[in-house]
Image (tube, rainbow, N blue to C red; front, side, top):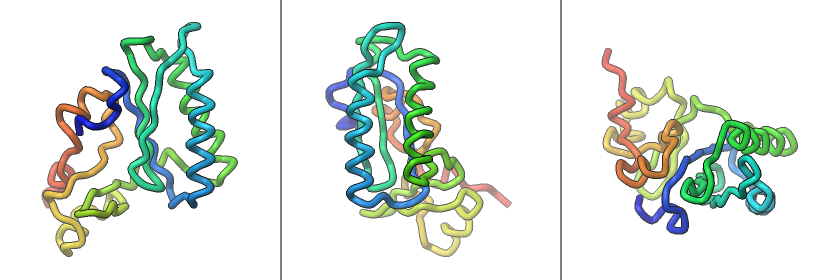
Length: 157
């Protein structure tokens, strides 16, 4: 995980997952729009240095370098509003927190939160597979801990 965001020392992390696969043109448009957003993104008049990394055609990770400027409440809201606006335009929900991206071998499977146990029981995913934890809010946590294993999500009956 240390290879994520080589140009950013440390800072907050946001993970946005589209509720459907984006076509290549759609993904390219989101990337371009994000880069334009980054050019004007600021916190209390100070420019925010940010970077995006796409894991696939549905998952984008964004981090901002907190050594350059603090990302405050209003500037965080601007990023959320960006994804709300672009989601409305594209008819995509970037805020579904019940679908869990599971890193299973070389693919990413999208499993509803309620189906995790069943998917493991059926052997469709493994308890040792990693999942993209959308609650990770710090680049430092991602770099040191990485993504957790699915077993951390399993509910005992």
